[in-house]
Each structure stands twice: as C-alpha cells, then as structure tokens.
Image (cartoon, rainbow, N blue to C red; front, side, top):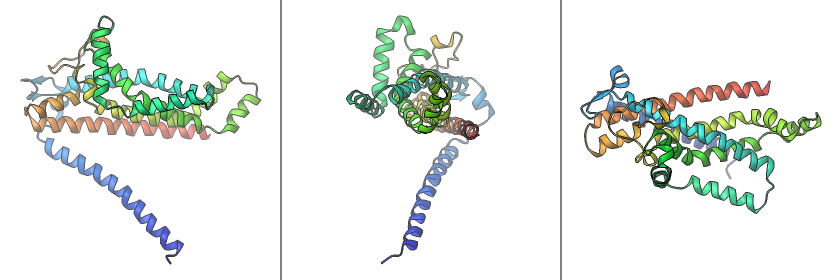
Length: 283
C-alpha cells in the first residue's frame, strides 16, 4: 500500500509537471514565432505604413485596426454580458427558462468562429448595410462582440454568484433596495471575476480571423474619423493573407509576434487592475 504522504508527493509532482508544461509550451511558441519573424521586427515595423502590398514598410494600420475592433467588441459585449449575468443571478429563479438560457449561452460559446463571420456578413453587410456602412469597423467589432458575448456572460455569472450571501443580507438589513445592493455591493465585489472574463474576451477577439475576414480590407487603410464607419485592417487577416499568398512568411511571423505581445501585455495590465480591485474589496 502506498502511504498518503507518498500519494501527496506524487500528486504534487504531477501538478507541478502539468503547470511547467503550460509555461514551456508558451515559451516554445513565443520563441519559435520570434525566431522566425526577428528579421522583420524593428521600430519602423510597428510605426510605419506598409508599402508594396505589405511586402515592405510597417504594420501600423493593422495594429490600430485590431485595437479599435477589439475595443468596439468589448464596449458591446461587456455591458450586455454583465447585465445578463445580473439578470440570471439576481432576478431569475432556477427554472426551465433559466436552464434554457444557460444552455443557449454554452451552445453559442461552442459555435465555430467562421459561423459568426457568416452571421455578421449576412446581418451587417446585407440587411443593415444602410446603418453600418457594410464592411466597416462597426460591423467587424459587433461581429466579434457577438462571438465573445457568451464568454462574458458565463464568467460574469460565476463572479456574481461568488459574492457571499452575508454581504447581500447585510445590505438589505441596512435598508438598501435590490438595485442599490446590486450596484454598490454585488457588482463591485464581482469586478475581479468580471475582469477575468474581459481578459478572455479580449484575447479571443484579438486573435480571431474568421469572424472578421469579410469585414476588413487588405489594402493599407488607416481608420479615419468617424472611426466606426471607416474601413480598417487587422493583424490576423494580414497574417492569413501573407501566409496563404506566400507574400512574406517572415513578416507574417513578425505580425504574429506583435499580436501575441499585445495580448500578453494587455493581460498583464488587466491582472494588475484585477489584483488592485481585489485588494480594495478586501479592505
């Protein structure tokens, strides 16, 4: 018989190996992408306009386009997702309709991204073209927003459910209304978990190609005011174009490294905000 002490050591070793593998895989991917794209990486690659059909020059329009698209997606999905989570947790009983909503959200989360792209193409390019202007930042951002909405809803719901019942009852005991309790106790206490959902949504929105492949242009366009109704580039679609057309594999890897760096840096700062908010809540 193996003693419990030995079993604990074995399990700790297994967990340590699993965690180490995740870190190793991440650094292997980063190292490979960086080594393949290092010849294209320099300051001008990030700050200049592209030349000769993306074969030379920088990728500045694609970086700006990606950030604006993700910002539009988050501005659409985060408020709607959090409000839906509040509705499911605070205003709905556990009945068949609630279960149906959760199944629908989980099913949407499993829908392939290309399906969201076709949905966005049909809705914004054909039916709502007069409102969105066709293949614009608004159309692409809303398409990405629909795609990340299920993730925001589920993470927000989990975060809202984690608020201790004692805090809610204490608020009611002091005479607060339900809306006051939600706005001043429940949502502020759930912010760290909600930020986690925003991080996941940001990473997925920034890294997807299929949902916006019909909504962006390949020519070097820098979004102009008003930004929502302008055309734009995106890093993911440019990577797809450069690799599929064999235009410049080195520049494609350079773009990939820039995209990964943007996601990692954004996640880092979001987690700093998460820790800061969690520390203030504990106080």
